[in-house]
Amino acid sequence: MRKIMLKIKMAVVLAIFVGSNLSYAQLQHKKEQVKNNYLVAAYIWPSCHDDALAHKKLWSEGIGEWEVIKKGNPRFDGHYQPRQPLWGYEMDNDPKVVEKWIDAATDHGVNVFVYDWYWYEEGPYLESALDDGFLKARNNSKMQFYIMWANHDVKYNYWNVHRYKDNTNILWNAKVDWKNYKIIVDRVINQYFKRPNYLKINGEPVFSIFSIDKLMESFGGNLEETRKALDYFREEVKKAGFPGLHIQWNQGGGSLMSDEKASQFREKVKTMGFNSVAMYNMGGMNEDYIIYGTNSIKIREQLDSILDVPVFPCVSIGWDDTPRFPAKGIKDVVHYHNTPSSFATLLSKAKKYADTHPEQPKLITINAWNEWVEGSYLLPDMLNGFGYLEAVKDVFINGKYDRY
Image 1 (cartoon, rainbow, N blue to C red):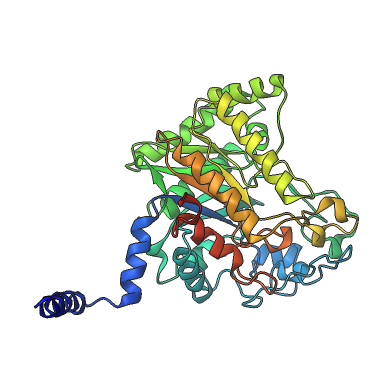
Image 2: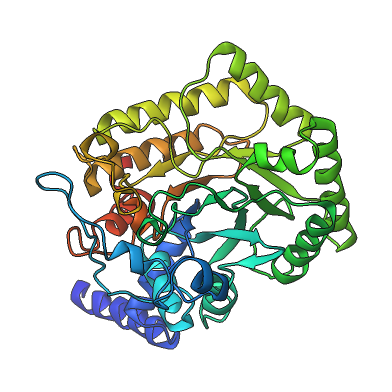
C-alpha cells in the first residue's frame, strides 16, 4: 500500500512538472533568481571596440584597447602578462557578445552592470558598448544597469603609452561648462533613465560620479555652485516623471583618511547632497591580496562611521595596470594570494556588511567585469577559467559562506 501511495505522489509531481512546461534547468534558474536578493553590480570599462574618437586619438588598429592589452609583458617571475581571455578578443559593443555576458553574469549572481560613461570634446566617448552592445542585446531585460560618469582627465600616454611614449600632457580635459552639462543631463535622462531596467532606488534613477573634484572644477570649485548644478539635474529628472535622482559619490578607491580629511569629506557629501557613496575599486592596494582586502574593510568602516548616507561595499579582484606603464614592477601589482577563493571570502564580508545595514539597499559593487588592462575582471580567462564567477555564485546563490 505504501509503495502504491508513493507512486501516486510521484505521478502527481511529474504531472505538475510537465504541465508547468518548464525544463529542469529553467526551474533551477528560477530557484536561483529567487535566492539572490542582492544587487551585485560589476563595473564595465567599455574600451574594447572601435570608437571613432578613440580610433583617431588612441587605438588605430580598430580593436580598441585590446591593442594595448595584447602588448602586456611580464615584469617579474610568474607575472601573468599578457592576460589571455578564455573567449578571445571580443568586441564589447557586439550585442551577441553581451548576450553571452548577460547569461554568464546572471547565472552566477551578477545582476547589475555599471557602465563607465564619458564625455570628451563636447560629445560622448566609448558609448557604443552600452548603446549597441548592452541595449541591443536581446536578453538585456534579465539585468539592470546604471551609469558612472567617469569624468576624469586623460593624459596622452595614459591609455596608449606605445603611441605617446612619455607625453604626459592632457589629451582630454573632463571639465564641462553649463551648456555641455545640460546636454549631458538631457541625454542620460532620455537615453537611459527611462529604460525599464535602469537601476532605481525608491523609484529614483541612480547616477554615479567618479571625480567630484572635476565636477566642482566645472562649477568654479565651489560647493554651493556644484550643489546648484546637481539640484538642476534633480529637477530635470522630476520633470521627466521620476520622484527624484539618487546621486552616488564614487570614491574610486583610496586609503584611510585623517580626522581632518574625513571631516572635509563628510562636509562635501552633505553640502552637495549626495545620496550614497560607492567605490570603483576597494582601496588600500597592497602586493598581498589579503592585506589589500583587510585595508579595504578598514576604509569601508571609516566611511560608514562618518557618513549619514549609505556606503555601498566594493570588492576588487586584483590590480595590475602594467600594460599601461612600462616603469611599473612587482611592487605595483597585487600578486600574492589573489585567488578566486580569497576573492570569495572578501565578497562574503561585503555581503555580511549589507546584511547588517538593512536600512539601505543590498548593493555590492565588484571591480570589475572586464578591466583586463588593470588585472581586475570576472570574465573567464586562461588562468582561472570561470573561477571568479563561480566565487560570486558560491557567495550569493549557493550560500556557501552562510552555512555555519
